Image (cartoon, rainbow, N blue to C red; front, side, top):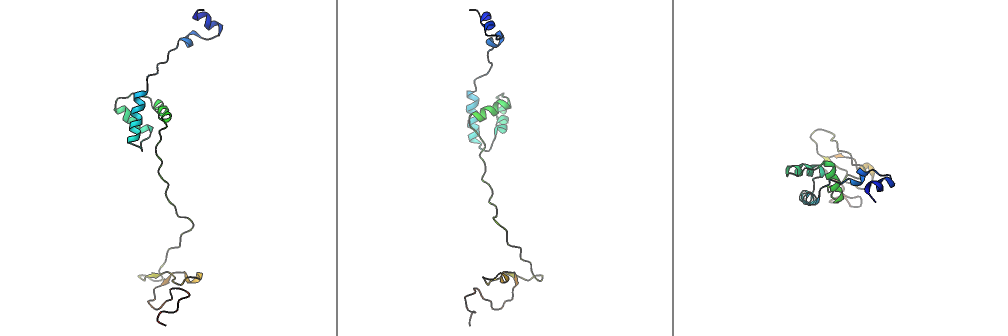
Length: 134
């Protein structure tokens, strides 16, 4: 059966049957792209496209992106920042200028945890401990 008759039977255009793809072999491009991606792990397909252009590869950015995805290449994600959990303690505010602050040294009750001006006198370090020296 002739090509003309076969195409008429299946109701298909002869140009569609005769079409030959013009796609070139991507083997060398794929290998170079993989080598560059492993060498520079933080480079995505856009920066690789620029570097490949400099090396003489003439390739469309959409085609390069397709090859990049087919090779399962991706930019390594950086680890997330550690953030504080909960609320932070308020900043200590001095009662007078040029006076050092002392956080409440007596553990236990909430009213003792407020910032106190440094008295320089005797103070209790723990609720169950006796006064120093007596």
